[in-house]
Image 1 (tube, rainbow, N blue to C red):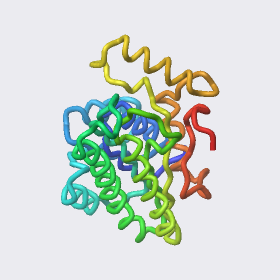
Image 2 (image 1 turned 60 degrees about the horizontal axis):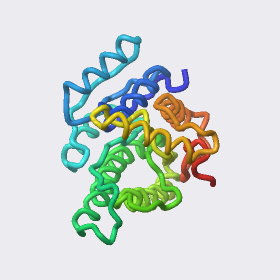
Image 3 (image 1 turned 90 degrees about the vertical axis):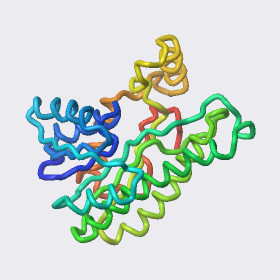
Length: 247
């Protein structure tokens, strides 16, 4: 197994992408700590993992709260993998210049805050171990109009990821982004069916492979990035956009 004897913390593990990654980590032998704000939702994912003979724990953690993140991380015996998949409220469909400053600032501030807090907490444990992997999700592709501050926030996170990789590399810690062009399969069922279908078709049309990445694809890429097979990969984005972004 690729992640045997590894301990992974997945923030936002109750969401569709977080749950897919947590299941993939557990299937490859990792003990997975499912971190989020709602214990009931986390327990459902943990139950699926245990039913498949995987190892899962849950922790109620607010990944935007410094004390909550730090206290949780300090109480763990070790952290080998940290992956933040926290979702954020966005304001799609409006040009930036037509938005209120507070609505532009909010996602950027929150994205930087949660990624910084969780990465810092993990890194402090990993430095003592002289090893570890910190993963972020989303990446930054070609600019597109009317996405609010969504891409601005991801761009800020990418700048932070580059700096963290440079600072943490000498301690044996790798920092990687899984670069996505969107995972239509993860869109909430609460969205109208016609809207979800339109988003899926548009996402697929933007790719070279004419299909969007799936939740299974994300899980497989996360396992690879976190494993020793990727031991020489850091400071970069692992492109899972199916060719929508060329780099």
